[in-house]
Image (cartoon, rainbow over all chains, first blue to last red):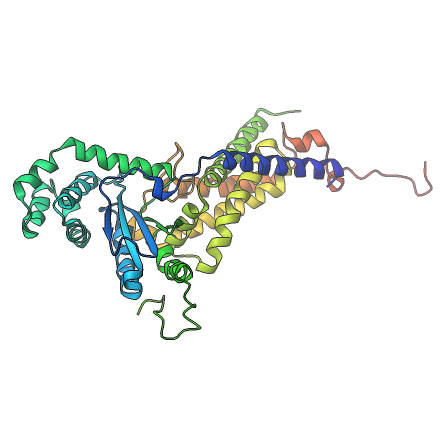
Length: 223
Length: 167
């Protein structure tokens, strides 16, 4: 390869690197805390040292898979962490929008997390229904919610708009896949990343020693 | 003499370059964790490799994609991109997560851009790119390329026959 060719190659690579650097630098930084949200749906103490923000879709199998890991995190770290749920229904999932609305309606009656768990537990059932409206009403009934208010809420377009606003906030964070988590601001995408890195990040945030050095500490591995 | 067919190879070369350059560019615009998460979710690669690949693959795609469009070092570039396409084919084919869950989007073109291909469409595209890369590698001279403009490499120059004692 002659010198002219080498110099040309170096110039192309430098120009590309500089271009990407400039574009990235001009991207507006947004944090998960600054996002528009419907009423905050929070599990665990509000002032916990570690805040996990989850953008999720009730019809997404990967989101359901992540629930096991979230449960394990709460078992391991208890009151030191809290979880904030944010709606991110994907267009490719037929009933996801309605499911999120149902969960939001349950939230207005103070039962978001129970409804959330039910939607994920029955993820193989309601998404396959011709119309899951009856399933959602049944779940609400089983949680002893006010069914009249719940039904009215399910038909309320303002709730739908609020959910979409929350999703738009997620898009501004360049969230493109569910589930996406922010653990004290650090982004993790997908259940595999959560399973592999969450404990390590939480430990670091809490100032705990790594599990190798502390046998009594909860292990990041699954049992 | 330039054949009509040679123009076809130019178009295909630019097409292949655009595919890779766009894929790399879109991934680089997004937080790197998005691609990292997509790679991890395939559950094929050893997890220790995922962070390194998430940082390097988008740059390799962008740089070699632009090289291909510009016709710079076409033959080695074609080989690199062909190898990359083969790796993508193998990853998709061996990912039980993809086959079982039927991912609608592989994250191959970033996930926020206007081009959204299904995993199966990307699979076909990668197979085509693999063979196209091999074909482009086999072509010695490329029209409308920096290679042609900058002149042949020393190794490609015709050997000048000279008399044993000078002129």
